[in-house]
Length: 175
Image 1: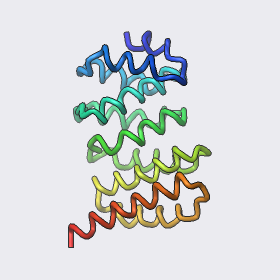
Image 2 (image 1 turned 90 degrees about the vertical axis):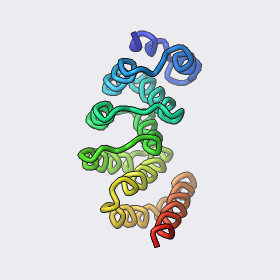
Image 3 (image 1 turned 30 degrees about the vertical axis):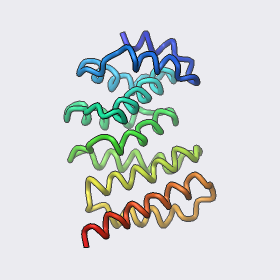
């Protein structure tokens, strides 16, 4: 059902996706189907499904543990930069299950190497989210942010500044 709806998405204008968002309830079966579509090799299907998941997560829709594990398991098959960006933008709104840290680390490392500056910026943010869920990664994330200071693009530099402020806020709360 959703694949048919997503196939009418032109890959650019989100009006089709907004219509789906308005007319389809984010029930378990819908979320499950969207997660399975994140691995579809059709650009429109993959980016459309991740856009919908991101928007529902931003609106407070909670994904179950098995759904989150399936989403993280799909990361190696997410190939389009827009879909990767949507996943990175979803991270502040979802839990990262215990056994998904390694696959997320792998995914974010690859996103940092992408040509797209917005994806790289949000990958840095993804590392921050990873460290929030798994404090053992704090030093690793600090090193990655230090390396990111060499980035030339304003979007990436701005995102790193925001992350550093958030990290400072968190560390001052702990002290």
